[in-house]
Length: 159
Image 1 (tube, rainbow, N blue to C red):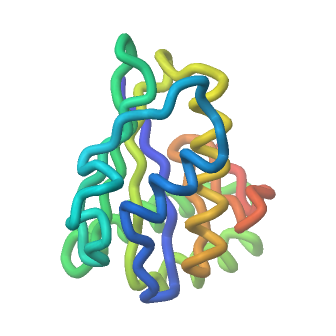
Image 2 (image 1 turned 30 degrees about the vertical axis):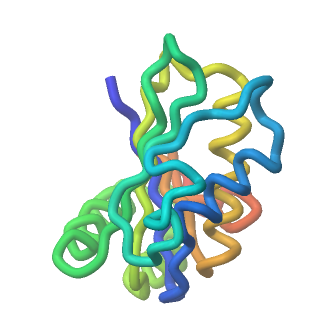
């Protein structure tokens, strides 16, 4: 079953797929370099207005899929996140997260198969989430869990 992580970004800065791939490779999270689609060498890897990026870190595992939303898709993502904040235990902290989500200019969503992720893949995901949040003035939303700041410290826990 897919699990989704979202980085709601207040900045319009677009992290390219090459930047993500370089960050993952330089982090040395895996024994072998993952495969990227598009590849790091592809001209499209520098496109700042991309919508999908796939990271295959192990041949026997489902890949990690990054997508980026703007416009109507962004509004839908914001609506879903705000709905989750309605269930927050601490409404004062939820109000802070609500303001950050509402100010988002883009959202990067990371789709994973939670049951299949290796410890190395989890560590990579945490690092990438924090990287994107720092680069794009973002807040991280882990579905069914909560909202986190740029250092992955909890802002709002759900349920």
